[in-house]
Image (cartoon, rainbow, N blue to C red; front, side, top):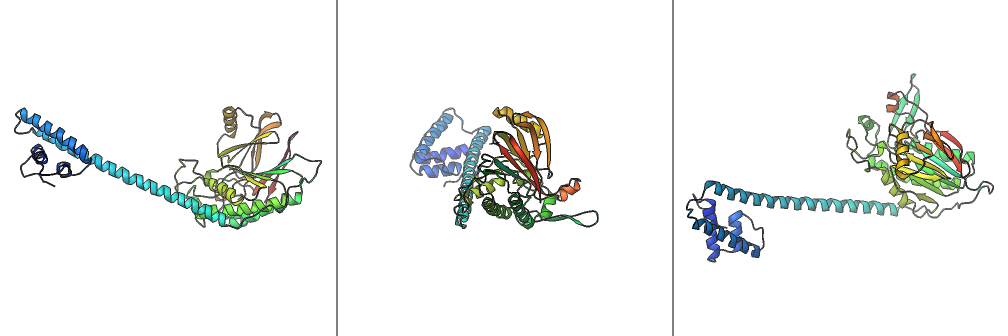
Length: 402
């Protein structure tokens, strides 16, 4: 590479090394490196550039300019710096693009390993208890079991005015409460021919606020895996008791959204409950009597001619949500069933073909927690169970207190 001489301006330097190129003293790559400090084009393109630059310099000489204008020199220097800057930008973009590809590859590899790990788990196999009609005079009824606000991963103890334990919660207590639901359904011995199980969000405690940290005893991702495996086993045991096909519909909650501590969620689709749904699909793929619907933040299912909307229920105006989806999809929503508030309540908001249009909130699996105590809102842990038939819509319902 040829360097600029002392007291030699840039255009004089450019003219000197271009003449060297024309006389064959240097090659195109050395000419480019000397001129701008880099080789940014192929040799053919550099040849064309050198022809242009030589003609440009000859024009200047023809005008009789012996001492180049300083502004002109500065302009050329700026051009050189711009070329170098653009070259560096391209290099940086290439680095960032390669980094993106590396992260994408890592993510895909991570997903593949998770899938492989799930597939290596012992299969639940084919159902040992096949579907049979319990009572041939009662054909066509569907059971609906709604579970909300598990807050898996949360561990706490709530004491009352006199130091008594009002509610104690942990992953193990959550498991006990869910097993007790199966026992209650078995004891009631209710007749139905198929079943819908709705998971209504807040499956996990996650980090919604600073107080969440005091209740977490393990990383959230570990809880997601443990919860998903437990629900898989629980659904299989539920099937063994009810002995009818089970369909699972799942919506996400505000605690399930993946977020940075104290940061409001920007992307609601980044919901950890999606992982639960995909886990259940893989884990139960060989168990044909249990079907898993795709994840959605709001779901609408027609159960025996009753359109039921499932959502977590953090919206301030649930009736507005009902009207929005009715107008958007030109449907009638007969019921909205949601959780979020940790206590059961029902509100009539109109009339439908199958009875009152209702907003139904179901209780929580976790029960009263420190936040509920702080805002002076308490209710026993519970879930909701109902029966539907084609002629009458909902015919029976109850809350199971846990």
